Image (tube, rainbow, N blue to C red):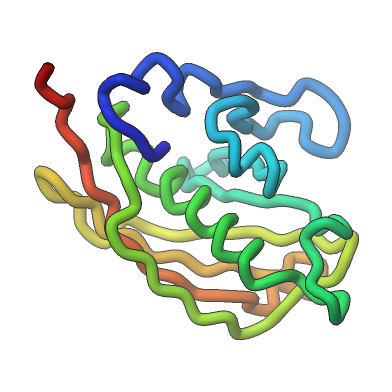
Length: 160
């Protein structure tokens, strides 16, 4: 979650919700935690048996561009969501912001297809966390959609 100390009561951890039924049963999401992600998503995540997080969403009409393909802005918004999930353990509830973000759009998905993301923390420092990830079209055998790298900046509480 992006934000300063005054927003600690509305950070991702405070809004974490596990889905109980339907396609996303067993997955978690953050309704109400980030207004833009509420609009752009819904985006979900869960930890695999090996402890590695995976993020996903089902491509809807609202996620498409004029050509009927997954919009690049949607891909990048999903990547921004995923990078904070990937770095969740390294962030440990500290307020953070996306400092840099690089993305290569290499494929796409169509309406109704499942889009997934996996990634890793490259390095977790005292004030910055370096993350990279790969977004894939799970409905097309894992065909790559995008690769990304980012730096998350830990933001200390602001002084009065």
